[in-house]
Length: 395
Image (tube, rainbow, N blue to C red; front, top):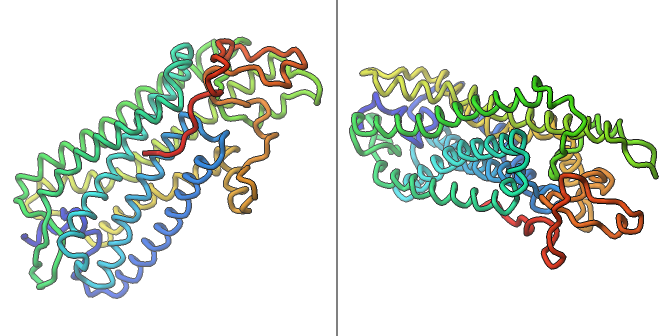
């Protein structure tokens, strides 16, 4: 492979031939810190959703899928970067070249698909609440996630036929392409269109429609806003809840539901914005270099591009912790290793007892003569478990 195409190598995430000790030290330090933090954070996201019944919502299913994909990116791209910098050459052999390349692109592409999926889910839940009763369920989310992972897994098999071990001009082994640049250019363009431009276009369009409903439409000020059964309980709702023993007023419930929808939407919008900003340098550079006879290969700028990619995978759990009260409480309880499997205090979910689309009256409700919330009046049959079947995995 010609040296000018070295950056285009899918697993060449460091300039293996450089002798700059300063560059290697900074590169290894930054990547190690970011990947370690990202791996810990995304593992915690998966654990709190899998081990906490109240966290098994349609939106959180997609966030688990995103967390698993981010873990794949950090492990398959970030860690080989460190070994490449330290060893100065590819050390994983031919099988490692194929496998690591495959999992890199699988994680990258599933990330963008998961972002698109939860954006569409938010749009349906907020802009078409009646359809959401049947469309935005945990079981449907699991089926969509399975389709995403299956389809993307098949698509990424293309890389098995495009990469191989090569010998650089410095006589070092590297994992790179075994075809000429004019052949893999269409693949880059296809990836760029399918897994970057399209998700951002869809997200921009749908979040614009969501924002119009939540922040500018008169419906946001009406008293009959129907709360989502799986919604996040917000600080405003907590403040609006009346004293124990008294029913919260209709106004308080409405304000809580609206504030909750806004908060969840803001959090997911931040995830999309980070995806766009942090992937833009790398995607743009690869696209531009594909058309240049002499690609731009400044090592510090390349390091910046790669650090942005790893930071995108590592920052999502931080966003959840900062913007979601439930995730923050779940993370805190997980760190304390609470016994019995109950990660979150029941009181946190007092007004969000079920994440299903239909809720049966609870025993306490029957004693007090309470009726189910308006959004859940279509109760499921007694023999069917409350809500969808428990969410037990992302893939």
